[in-house]
Length: 433
Image (cartoon, rainbow, N blue to C red):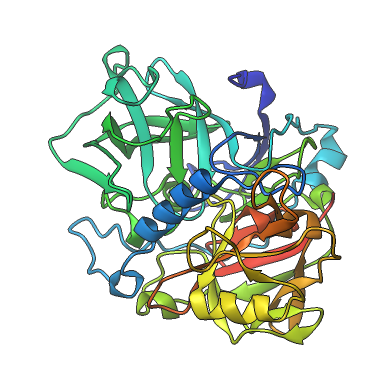
């Protein structure tokens, strides 16, 4: 199902007039409904654990964050590695809706495994479905005649504004699969927000499972420019540079199960999607040698029923990952604090299981002394095998040299998340579900 353009709620907020700059652009805020797609594996107590899909995600995570400490890069010739963003008070989209009577449109969700929405590319615009991903920085768009992509996607020949290049692009995964193509540019729009000449990877070869099941066609990276393998500025950071946003931030609400209402709010927050106050935490780059590549914040550690189970670590917020991946030592310490937990039989090192019939303790990341708990429904990734009395935990250990955690949707379904480029911070509030 492709979203109709009318399904995207658009709200415009005129910037104050400035006498010395009569052509100052409109600042905008847009709510993009997103739906869940089958990207990886369920984290549901009602569905058996999918070991093959989990292994694929582990390979993806391994590739994405390989050599993280060496990612400090010099500025490219066009200075794309740094984007200056003005700190602007977060704009709550609800404040405008109350005055103007506009509303958002929510979509049905499907399985807690991927969150996708609509975008358009080219002239005339071709509508595609994108996976919005805070854990990567590149825009990947499969093109017509892509070998191995499993479907026809963006037709470059039908766009009058498509600009190819000879710059190669390759994304290699730990299992040997890859996406490859060349860097190109075209007009890209999400809602009413448009970036002309947006650089992206035009994918012409796919040797793995990227898009093969037809659930989504585009990956839109929303991490920092320094993480771009294409040496390109991500879409959302181009919007910041163009002074297009009401607030220089975006936010996610990820619904659980078959609940409706998942959304991405670009340039805004949506107070109807969370309860209580937003807690903000400054970005830190200890895991990347001082260069801000990801939306990473410092955690005091992980607790089990309020008791410290691990030491502190850097947390990378990654909407493009289903589970939570931590260093092996942290996983071992965490599950040692859960009664009955044991290394999962027949599974890789770092996978742990616990008795399905026992009450799951409260597992929480502690940020600035405040616990952020994971709902038991999300922590339970399902029986290890069909009919097993052991259930897989949704926090996995992985071999990595740097002390960081990849915090995916298992956590983010519980907490409305705000990614503030201007304030250089991440905000979290209790999700309304």
